Length: 295
Ligand code: NAD
Image 1 (spheres, rainbow, N blue to C red):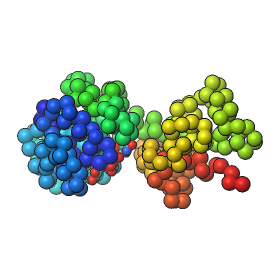
Image 2: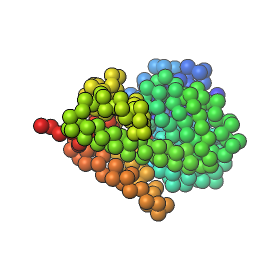
Image 3: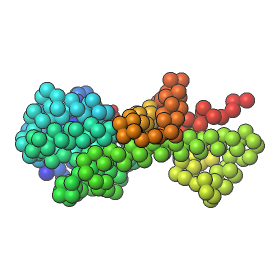
Image 4: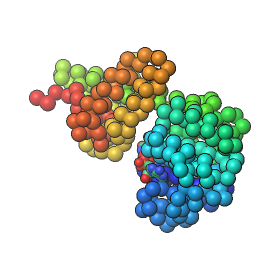
């Protein structure tokens, strides 16, 4: 298949490389020329503009930072809508707000383009290994057509419903992840300050009703687990600023839906405080630093 891949950052570049490995003809475009050059070395056709990238392709995939980038790449001057041949299929894998995903999807439909939102979880390791989870908002016929391509970049491909529902699934999951991480951070810090060995406490939680992924797979307390960001100074992993972005998407969507998200809003404020203290580049489990006693 002839594919244009737009947005070759931490996630997009390894995803695009997996499509090249699967044998597709790939045109690569990013606003940063060095990202395009890196993909060209892996065998992609380098493109100097969106128009050059989408010429003659069957499918366009985007992996961009946030909603304004998605709007401008699709609907801006010289964007995908202005330059892609009518009927070309579009998949946006960026994490953006569901409202924008639905609006851009509707604009695509007006121009005869079937479009899916397909945000991912699994991080950069999952993107490299081709084991991402895709949460897809698309009608059934479109999902059936794009699933094989997504399966070349991921392991679990789930249709969540119609346009926008992939983004809904993504932001609800990440809001819960932030809340559960803060809960584990608070409980582990309380236990430590009351004198229990954090490893013993984590063992109890992980075989009791407090068990959750943030505790048994990604524990934020240093020394409790190996091979997690807490064991390496909170480097790598999923950045706190990216979590803050996803919490903003969730609370904005909640406002539009007039749906209370009390703990989600509190989690957003805690991550904003953490970011304002200069820690936004640390893994999101580093939020435990707000709770741990220094003396
Ligand atoms: P990134 O910033 O590394 O990559 C984004 C790329 O888009 C950059 O290379 C940038 O130059 C390019 N870009 C920006 N504007 C552009 C434009 N107008 N035209 C062409 N290219 C443009 O971000 P990332 O970490 O790859 O994340 C991409 C998306 O995936 C985000 O929405 C993020 O929330 C989501 N996500 C990231 C992770 C993660 O662990 N990094 C995990 C899951 C989901």
